[in-house]
Each structure stands twice: as structure tokens, then as C-alpha cells.
Length: 97
Image 1: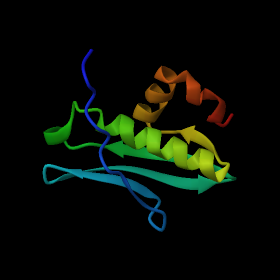
Image 2: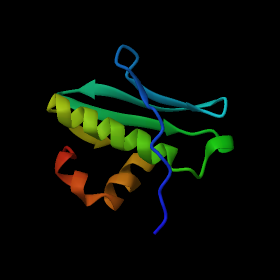
Image 3: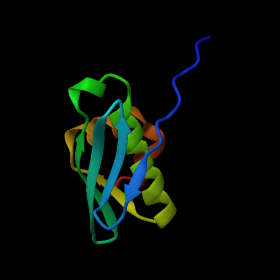
């Protein structure tokens, strides 16, 4: 059994509707907007230098958990978030529409 790497410390800037994480001098982000009581995930971006470490997945999971705590549904409008939720059916009940 192998240990999985620890989850990165993800920040949330609610004024800018943004989740972010800094690793090795690079910053990844997830951008969202609020629309009709739902969190619409518009963009998930991870620089190539820190890609392949699951960073985007951690950002999307954090966004879904935040939305759940707020009582919001989620619209995975960005392609990565849509694929992520398809791979994590435990979050499917949160998807709007």
C-alpha cells in the first residue's frame, strides 16, 4: 500500500470567486461565479510545471465541498470540472440541472 501525497493547502478568495494553490513557485486556480443559487465553475487552470500531481482535482473537490457547505448546487461549466464530477459520482447529486 502506498501513501498518497498530502492535499495542497488551497486558498479561497470569495471576493474574486477564486480557489487557488501555490506549489513550487507556480499558482493554479479555479474560477467560479454565482448564478441563481449555484456555483458555476468556469475555469480550472494548472501551469504545466505543476501538472500531473492532481492539483486540478484538489481544486475542484474544494469547490464542491465549499458549495455543499453553502447549500449551493454546482454547474461544472469548465471541461475539467465536468470530467472530474463524472469520475466522482459521490458528488453527482450536487450538480445543477
